[in-house]
Length: 446
Image 1 (cartoon, rainbow, N blue to C red):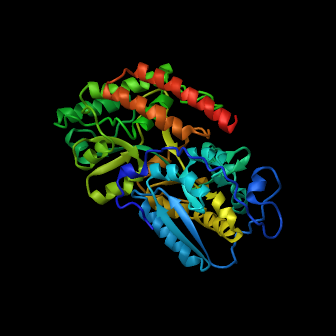
Image 2 (tube, rainbow, N blue to C red):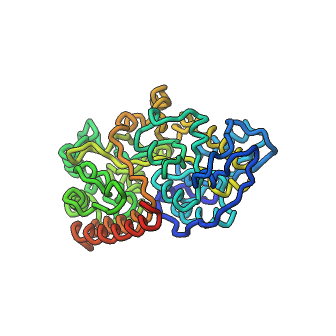
Image 3 (cartoon, helix red, strand yellow):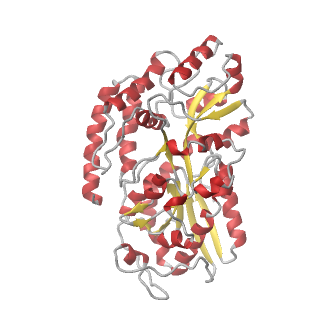
């Protein structure tokens, strides 16, 4: 079942943290002995062993995700394949805009009206684990013999909260640079820019060729992801390692936002670029370059326009770019029914093993072994995957999604719009974000 009728880029974004906590304890009558998943999470023993198979009666699992973009059809296909291979498990998919997903999930699970299984971005796992929305999936990881050697370190570690695993990594996705090959050729540009000098030179050549505003700077999504990439490239960090404070107003952070605003001031971009406008303009040939996620690959393929993809240029001293990872999870709601709980683990295990097929969605398989086996050979995102070691991820800090949405995104937007200087916008946002992070530490524990 699909709850969204449009798969535009804006629908798979805007990571907004739901403010309602799932606090009620759901009881599970354990079969075959052992502790319930809830008891295991509280240190009360081991949950019933997961064998990798489900032989019980027919069950139906509700599966929530936010794959509303060009990745959606590939997830549809995987769900259909799973259902065809499992006579006693039927997965019913509910695809929701990510913003609504994170807002609805805690309350829905608390009310018993949420999913048994789902997929979410890695930076949301700690928040939902701390709020008792999702339960540990160590048994699935152990059954699949997953370990840190087969994943990027930050992706693997993001699924761990208080020494238990809450997410099974599926993919890695990042920002990338898309460019119009026809316009590049007209401007005499033979190679995609790789650093600030070649990027600015390309913009000047494009203007000289008649493309007056070749690179539109968004005021909203994905502006804050561009900012984070530049901050990392400048040598800065967005947050303290212990999750106690934001560090956006550092010299490196201010310089990142000043560069973004300078693109508008120099006339390379129109002012007040609304959300997704820069991407739609790229599809319409109104600009020459855009920074967006690799989830746009299939959408661009469908247009028939002349385009290519390349890594984000290195504007600072370090080659770094924002990235995230989709992880599968099991909710506390699933633990109300032992059959559904066991079936949910089978679903997660099966999905994890399909990461090579999922590459068709434009994503990068999270498993090193799958990439090394050639899953990305000839695919558009292969050029991004080759630099996977340069990708940076947000820390697994409970409440980080709310901090981003409430403080960072507005500060970046205000500065690009010119309503506040980068220094002033980041100073105020950093102070407010740190206060919020301190409250989160008190609520969730350090």
